[in-house]
Image (cartoon, rainbow, N blue to C red; front, side):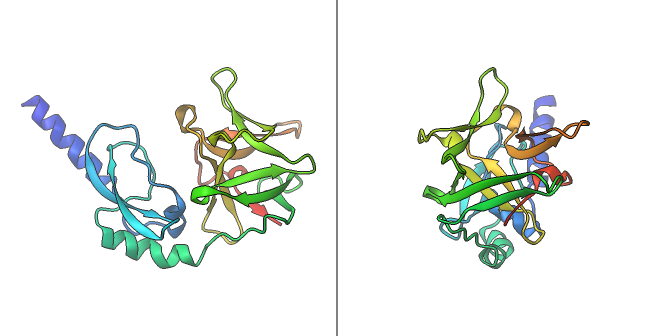
Amino acid sequence: MTSILFIAFISLFGLSSVYSNIADFDCFERVDPGPGRAYFEVYGWNAQNKTCTKFIYGGALGNRNRFEASEECLQSCHDAVLSKQLHFNPTRRYSAVNRLHEQFQIALNLEQVENGYFKLIAQPDGKLLSVVIPNGKPSIEIQDFTGEETQLWDIIPTGEKDYYRIKTRSKVFDRMDFMFLQVTNDDQTQVNLAKRDNSYLGQQWRFI
């Protein structure tokens, strides 16, 4: 009896984690089954082919780009995402300005590659912003091109005009996958990775 009740609880919990009426910027997140082992057939918006696709959600974590029905997914995401398509000129040099500390800027070229990911090419040296995990703890460094997923990034609208979050493609420890600016008490700055935090301005960037 205990095991039956446990399974029922897991099922109800998983269904309660399928979102509706989400903020349109959440549609830019890629579908994420999460680490759970439950089996829920849900739908997520695929920004590359502009359709809703079925995937299996494991019942834990993941993100808000998941819906019980294809129709709900399409209604929530189609028009909203098309109105916020990302267009960056690969030959133009941008400055990535952090919202928390606007004096901090990163000079970049943004080159879109396969599946809608971006390479962030630091200027003037032409090397790529890359995720490295030397001692089990992720950090961001500038490296030569290696063709690895650690050098590919998603650029995700925040829902506020001209501000974005920058998320690594690579799977890092404890889902610490969003670029943020850390400012110390003595006003030192460092770019690193952290879990998504909607309220933290250090995870929000604009390109000028």
